Image (cartoon, rainbow, N blue to C red):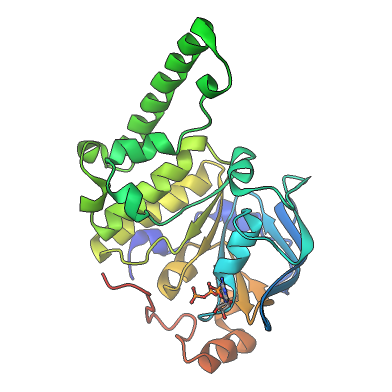
Length: 295
Ligand SMILES: Nc1ncnc2c1ncn2[C@@H]1O[C@H](COP(=O)(O)OP(=O)(O)OP(=O)(O)O)[C@@H](O)[C@H]1O
């Protein structure tokens, strides 16, 4: 891809990485997320075995690796959607072990989800409202609570409409989500995650199945989030996207962090190239695209 948005992240994000060593488990100046000894096995297979990982606040960090490296499993563990066999991890200094996904989101760390079949039957606006923070009316009874609840519903609706306008989905607010294109669904997934005003967003393959015409728009949204101060951690297979917008890259292979660094470090790291070639995958920086889904 040769677009402006992939030509290089604004310096601010990369400046934050200036003191970080390009080695697995390297310390960051101001880590928003830390994980130690996090492990998950399925039967005899160790899917994740990460000794130490820190994610720098205010940056776009990519989590990459060949198929089956453990990226999705690590995402699930960190966000409370799977249980680790061992390890400790914290977000903004608070331990997250054993905290379920919806509570992790309330603490400011949200992940995107592909639209499930049930959600595709709802309208775009209904999808947004379902992602809104907890409803006050569920906790209190009586007229005062109903009045407060109505106020909250109005605020949620206003936020949803603002976000839909930002992602250029406002004209589609009453359309059934299932009628959206692959790229528009990705925009909706991102917009949904912002309903809770997160400090950190974790994007699971934001470019998968996206028509090239919408890739540019998605990239601009991701860099805009970072420029507004939101920390972004994303899993992606498209090497052009990864090398273009990441401030820092963490490489997983067979459940372990085998390399970390800025795009230039990773591009020339032989261990990373070997891991990808060993998995018959794209060579990092080759420009080849290995999307799981078609356009
Ligand atoms: N629920 C599960 N039960 C059994 N094995 C699992 C389960 N989830 C993941 N695995 C296995 O754990 C390993 C890591 O899988 P994971 O999906 O985390 O990798 P990934 O890096 O996200 O791969 P991809 O890029 O293909 O999505 C794989 O060998 C996978 O088959």
